[in-house]
Length: 221
Image (cartoon, rainbow, N blue to C red):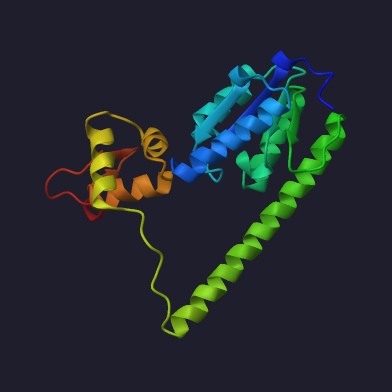
C-alpha cells in the first residue's frame, strides 16, 4: 500500500531498551522488516532507550520528528510501543505528525492510506494498550503483595553492579556525559543512572546533579 509514497520519503524508527544481545537481534529484525516495506536503509533510525521516556529524552527520535520528516513523508514503526508507552505522549506525537502531514503507521496495527482514519485507529489502540499495561502492573502488584504475605518475595534483582557504578562514574566525571547520554551508552534507564549518581556516587540535586563536597549531603541542602 506504500507504492504511492516515493522510497526517499519513507522513514522508519527502531528502538530497543538495552544493548543486550537479544535486543541487538531485535534491532536487526526491525531493520529487515522496514527494508521489506521499501524503506531505504539510510532512512532507518535506530535508538537504545526506554519508550517510557519522553520524546525529548530520546534524541534520535526527536531529531527525526522535528527536523528530518517533511510533508507527505511516511514514518513506520514495527510496534506502537516502539515510539511510546504513554497515551498522552503518543497523542502529542500523533498531533505533531498530523499537522506536518506525515503518515504514521505501526505495522502491528490495522492501518489505512487515509491519514485521518489512520490517526483514529492508532489513537484508540494506544489508549487500549495503556489500559492493558496498567492492568498488568496492578496484577503484578497484587502478586507481589501475596508473595510478601506468604514470605516468598525475595525482591527485584538489582541491575546496579560495581562494574556499572564504575562505568557511570567514568562517563560522568571523565567523559562529562549527561544522564541521557550515559543511559544511552550503558543501555540502562535514566532512573537507574540517576539513582547511581545520587545514592552511590554522592551527587546531589541543585538545578542539576552535582558532586557533593565533603560533609555535604542531601539533608544539608
